[in-house]
Image 1 (tube, rainbow, N blue to C red):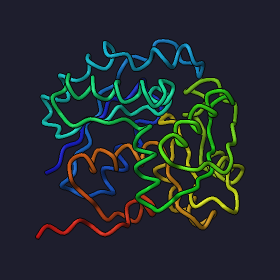
Image 2: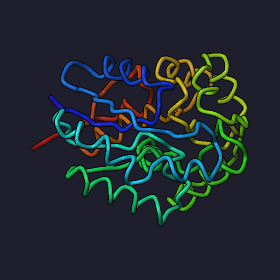
Image 3: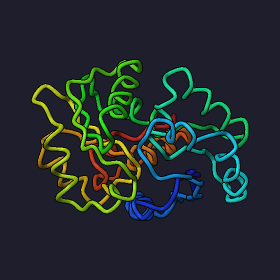
Amino acid sequence: MTALGLLYPGHFAEDDYARIEQLLGSDIRVDLVHTDVGEDAHRLEVLRQIGTPERLAKGVEQLRLSGAEAVVWACTSGGFVHGWEGAPEQVRSLAVTAGLPASSTSFAFVHAAKEVGAARVAVGAPYPEDVAALFAEFLRTGGIEVSAVHSSGSVTAAEVGAWGEDEVLALARAADTPDADAVLLPDTALHTAAHLPALEKELGKPVLTANQVTVWEGLRLADRRVNAPGLGALFTREPIVQV
């Protein structure tokens, strides 16, 4: 049994994780602890407060008691808004507090893009333009070229959490460019776990979404690879063979 611990802000698309856990198989457990979001707003000053060490620490003890082997801060914007210097410090603090390997969804996108061989990506962000631009900057600093950024301008996570398949597909289509190796859809408030096969069939390329890459990152930290085609191209890589 591999147990993953996720710190998830608020209550928006947490049911994605139950679906992902089911698709991964019986020996993977995804434990979710909800953290306080304060004000629900995609504004920079609010997003910089959502992942403070104090807020994250409140959920850590519960994850430790669950037997988690790794912990991931399951929030994209609550990581990249701190930039390539602040986001690693956020993760380091989380790792020290938890006593476990740690990461965040922001770094998960960088690692996952490299995993599927996507040197150039297109971004479909539910955020306002200024927030979306920071995500693109974070990716570029991480060595990922960004061909285009499409922003839907949504101002709250609750709004994004209410989107269905049609809205998610529209976001992905609007973001895609012919030269992009993959399309990235940030925001863990966005329901995508049920739509990954349709997204990749529609675009003909890997699609990386926030809740999907968050779980993959937890598995990476735990040295697990799982073949689960229902979760997209990211989960069809060959498992690591132990010799």
